[in-house]
Length: 303
Length: 287
Image 1 (tube, rainbow over the protein chains, first blue to last red):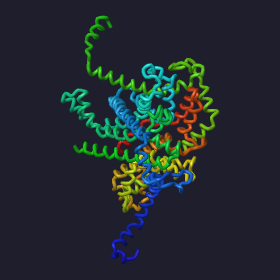
Image 2 (image 1 turned 135 degrees about the horizontal axis):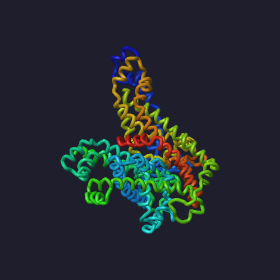
Image 3 (image 1 turned 90 degrees about the vertical axis):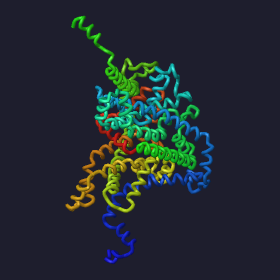
Image 4 (image 1 turned 30 degrees about the vertical axis):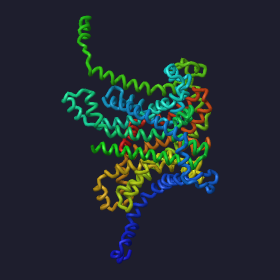
């Protein structure tokens, strides 16, 4: 470094800051992750947008035909897409409130310090460490003609996976069983973060269990309940494994969901450009949901 | 106790709301636990049910056989291969995430460099990108790299995710700066500050992250299903899919396989129950 650069133009000072030893060290620490992030997340994301403007040729990408926005136009008139969007929304509506209800009951109950807490926690949480394909095949058995579900509830609903009206609720039930433990853990932490003093004060004011729940528990657990609702919506919107292992979208398309449709386009009919467009629309929907949630939650916290 | 005393006690018992409430809590909690246990019970019960007893429904078989467990363990060479594949992929992913995420989080929170705020912003924003929507372009990339059926095809895309960076950035941020300053005065290099001060202080959060990533990577399904196209390269979750198609008619044999495949993580969970639950709880901050 020369002395005169001290008085030199601003960019020389900038340049020096870019290449001084500490900055280089800082880059060296950041580089491995950033390189992986750029190649395996950012690049595919941009490539997907690019592909969505083409009739993509799987075997010879160089011969792909540029079609502009045609994939997106097709999508707007694709009944399969709209059905998948409707089914996915229905799945979210079925799972998220039930997950919240069940996991909140688990968390509030466990927090009271009942006997056998450790065992109860084990049973609530253990399905979450199972992989979705095993969960799917296990429940396929339970729902089968000889399975425990059909044997005990079958007189009421029959073969659930074979009926358009019941197949999606059946998948939702599997999902609640599989994932309630995750939300239970989060809500338990949220409940344990509430100061017991608030309950003592409420009791002094003569509030019964119901009042305490409404005026102390719910408002104080607002953040973790919001997390369950928001993260739950975003996670459940991506449902794939349950559909792929249990119904492959049937019967009659009634359980076909967006990610499953994307998978079929990409890896069964090899319609890569169109699949990429579907992927981008899912992304836009989910980012929209996140932004709406962000403002709803943000305003709620302020207000 | 005389009859008169008992009668008196009975009369004294009032319908106490608090007691009823307490009983209700127990009924709900143990009821849920029972419901949650039934599918697992069915998996293990069926796995030891002799084929002659498969017809008709019974909660627990009257005769028990370990034949399918033994058969699965002794004759299935693919299963061993799948366990090995899954283990290698999950542990490599975990190790790589711990190393590169802690390095970048250290750089983003403890070192000064132009553009770091923007970079952190981009990483956090990538939370909104569901990995599932990236599978088509990612597959064309993996294909061009010649990585189909390889371990690295599963490792790198998972390492690119933002979760670990986000958790570690939050934690590193709160480590007080005086420790670091006095270390610098003692002539510590940047690397020693990272390796000997920041990392040891963050051990609890790093182990929780590692445990979560390991379980999560072990259970991945969609991406391995796409990128592994050869039975010998399968992970357990994908391998289970082939078992279903082979043993669809023999639920006892299938369940023995599925139970065996589930066992490794059941054991991990038994060993680290509290740690794993707290690693999930850590994520509530990511909302």
